Length: 129
Image 1 (tube, helix red, strand yellow):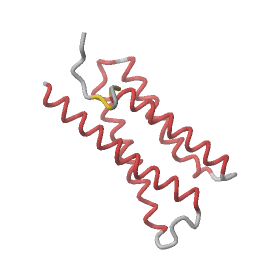
Image 2 (cartoon, one colour):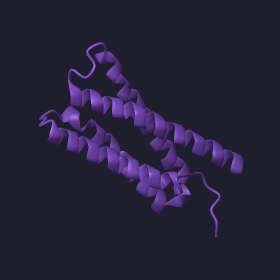
Image 3 (cartoon, helix red, strand yellow):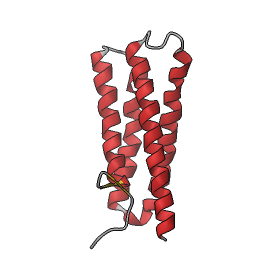
C-alpha cells in the first residue's frame, strides 16, 4: 500500500522529526564536551531536541493523534529558529564565543529548514484531503 504523504528524502515528517531531535541532542552534548563548557546553556539544543524526539515518537505510535503532535513539533521548530536568531546579537563580534555562536547559527538554520518543511507538509496534507 502506497502512502500519499509528504516526504523528505523518502522519509515522512515524523521520522524526520525524530532524527532532527536526536541530532539536536547529539549536538548539544558534543559541543558542551568539545568546548568543555560547564554552562547549562550549552545544552539548549539538547533540551530542545528532547520534545521533538518524544512527540515524533508519539506520532509514530499513536497515528490518530498525528495532527496534534505535529502541530506541537512545528511550534518547537519555530522556537528553535527564533532562539537561534540570538546569534544576531553577537554582531559585529560574531564568533568571539565560537561554540556558542556556532550553536546559535546551527539552531537558526536548521530550525528554519525544519519549520519550512513542516509547513510544506501541512500544505501537502491540506491539499490531499
